[in-house]
Structures are given as C-alpha cells and as structure tokens.
Image (tube, rainbow, N blue to C red; front, side, top):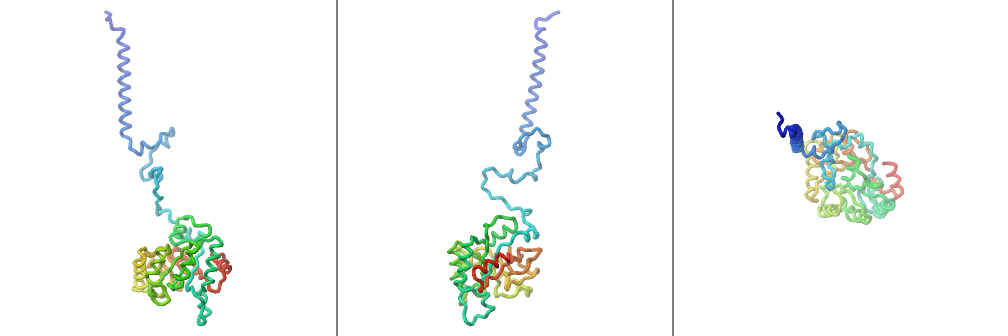
Length: 314
C-alpha cells in the first residue's frame, strides 16, 4: 500500500541526519574555543604541526610577555652578567688618579711632586681631554659596560681623586664642570673638616652636583694588613658615614696606596662595595671588578705626556 507522503520520507530523513551532524560539530567547536587559554589563543595558527606546539610557560620569552608599546626598560637577568674572563677581555677604560691639586712648594720632595699637580697643569690636562673628544664616565657606567657590554661614549675616561684634599673641591671640580665633566672622589673620612681638607658639607655638595663619592678608608691604612675589626673601622663605618652625608649608597672603594690582595675582595663585597680601584697592578683573574686599574696622573706630565700615558697604559 502506498502512503501519500512516502515520497517525502527519504529527503526528510536525510535532512534530519545532516542537521544533527552539523549541530554536533558546532557544539564541539564551541567547547574547544572556550577551553583555550589566553596564551593559546594568542598563538597564530600555522600549517606546520611542529610550529603549532604550545610552549611551556617557562619557555615563553620576556618579549612575548611585554605589550608592544610598553616603556618598561629591559630587565637584567643573572645569566647576562659576564664572567671574569669576558670582563678582562673587554678593552680597558682609561682611569686617571689625582691627589693634591695645588702649586708646588719648596719643601715638596721630588717624589711628592708625582702626587701634587700644579693648578695650571691640571687645567691643561682637563682641556686636552675635552679638546681630544674624551667624555667622562662614572662607576655605574663602567660596571654596566664591563658586566653586560653596555655602550660607552666613543672616547671614555674616568677621573678619580683620592684623599679628600681641599684643592679637589676648590680647583678640580669647577674645572671639570666647565667642560661638562664629572669625577669620582674617594674620601678618607678621618680628614673631613680638617685644615686643607674638604668638609662634610663640601662632600655633599659635590655629590649633589652629580659627582660620585666613594670610600678611601678611615685613615689610609694598608688593606693587606687588615684583621678582624679593622674591616669595620676602615671600611664599614666610613662608608656608612659617607652615605649619611650624601644620602646615596657608597658602593665604590679605592685601595690606599693602590695595594690590595684577594683576601680583601670578599670583605669588601660583604660591606656593599660593587667595585674597587687599585693603581697600575695586574687585575685579579677571578674578580676584576674589585681590582680595577688606574694610573696616577703625575704632576710632572704635560698634557701630551698624559695622553701618551693613557694610550700606552690602556
């Protein structure tokens, strides 16, 4: 027996089956989309199966985690700090060491005149550096260069001053500032406020004007002879006092007489010294940051002599 709608039975069944299959696919697709994490959703689809793999969270790069227009500076991670061998291999920055800046007196010995530079000669030194295109750098810049390869000016030089003598404040600092230069002043705290030495107020003023204040011990004793409490007396207390004067951390140290030994380095690190400066000796192969080389700018040197010494020494 033939029913009137038998001809429509097969098309209807086919339509229902197709509809149910489509509905099931859409529901499954929607569930998948909802289950995706934000990180997964941000990864573009690629036809290559291997490149579609989602990296584990700890392998995602810092770049991917920072919005494109973020002004946040890059973070320095421990793995980017150079090892001692790399630091030693970098080209050394010329670092000059001055002591007294004043005219010679009759009683000054021949040896003392190496450490005493007449005012006009000092001015000739600084003018030569400026005319030759040198630009001063400060310890933080030097440390960034040595440890990470951060760029420095084309002709960098560091100007350091030991022992707190008054001429450094009255003559040297104004001469540096005339050319836009900055210096590093290593302070011997026992001398603060004494005749012919800087006062606490003058040290703070130098710091406020953009110069760096470092420690040069309490009373200039040889670091190689320190024992026990000497580290507190000669390094810890003076650096704390300088921090109180300037309102800034005291993180750099100059060895009296330029004399040091490897045993001093952990003591300095323990007391917050990020770097330490000797004179012209060999750097420590294990810790070059605490045996940074300088040369004394002799009071006998003309400006051309100074320039030759810088080229030959660094």
